Length: 142
Image (cartoon, rainbow, N blue to C red; front, side):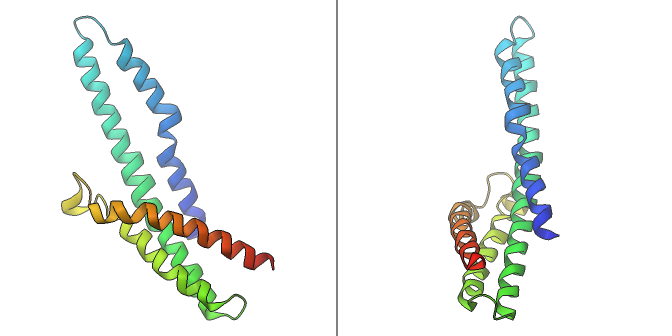
């Protein structure tokens, strides 16, 4: 259930790019005349709000949280059985923790500018997670 929830949460965070952002960009470029500057500022505010809510809040925070939890649950499941090599579970644990750290990037005192450590960890964690999933898939096929 946790993994199934992570996918739509991250999709909701990403869907702003093909739908909302092009429309905002068109309106920004078309804003002319006496009210053009005020329209552009409004569009900038709308973009910033959508980016924070859908991108940072939903897609990144909840997406990283759910993906990290799912990874920890799968890693723990691997360690609790003999179906797959235990090292796969051991490798999954720090990846899951790293994804959980990533969900804290824009929380609390780091809300405005982000926590640079989390910002550095997230791309590395997602590359490691992707490789871990490929290896996990290969072992499941064997």
